[in-house]
Length: 454
Image (cartoon, rainbow, N blue to C red; front, side, top):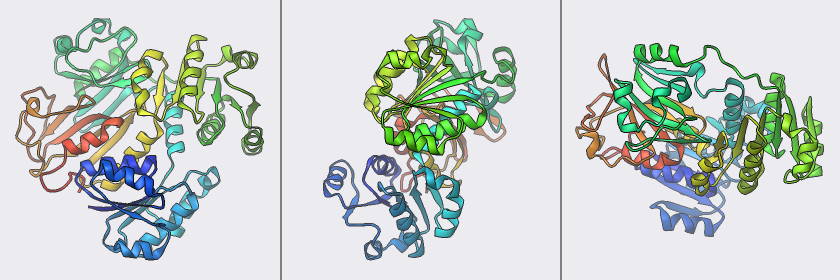
């Protein structure tokens, strides 16, 4: 598949890296020569140092022969124009990143008027994941995600004490016919290995045949459990803070936003109803305590600084706040998140890259996909005889630590795989993958000649 990406920033880099794992042909266009040079040193791509808004530039690369174009520059208006121009010039499908809140109530109009196939918004995507966690308390509706005859169940191990302190290699002796595919521990989702030990406060995701999972779920789940959330404090009144405050307020939650910029406070006050806007320094703990920090049910850090988000999240947890969520964009901080002990840490780039890849591939091979706590994705694909993983025992494949084959549908049967399991043509494979490992997953499931996304 031929794909053009206009904008060599963080999102463009992330999507390009993942697409190359699937053996796509990628062209990146940007006016920043140094950003393009950085890409060239790390990836085998074609780059064009020019303004993608110019029709002659799009025509020069033969945009009419491209299957997809993503416009993700720093300007919403420029992205809309580029995607619209590319579509008019014959590109099969186009997408544009649109972040400004002013556009959110007219996305359908923009899409239809400008003939753009897909509009992406990282801030809105991360907002929806936070909202889902806070309001529903679980990433999966009723705790169970069902795909055909296989189901995924999420529950806290305190509901089934036999699992506490159990090494994962012994898991099947306690719950035969089921597979532990992920653990949520102190705000971080991890894919367990044989020597992983299940800890007391872990939430665990297990995959199995639908009937057995449903029966077990009735023992460990609380039916219809929803949050009793009443008060939320949001640190940072940027786009994420704005979207989240509006959505929580509409649900009836009492929301406070702490924002350092007086000008931004005026904007928030003018555009948010029933939300308290506080102008102040969130690192001043005395100030937060005066604003009833200790009475909050949830605390969300969404400033533009990862370090500040993590430190304030740690402080909130030390104050005994039940749900603490941090927005963290740097993958280099993944290792310390678990030690901090917050409830959820989300990377907007990972989430949006996942959404884009699912849109690019369409429904041809990927049957379904769903995010798990905004940090991992469970998806179902159809195996074909061009895939390099075919007809080999799973233990012989170099599967990265952040990826697990959770289940296989073969005809009318559900297979919970082990190291000796072999994937056959037309198998429907359910995979759990950390969003940070999406590029590696693309490499794992690439075909011998084409990407499985083709």
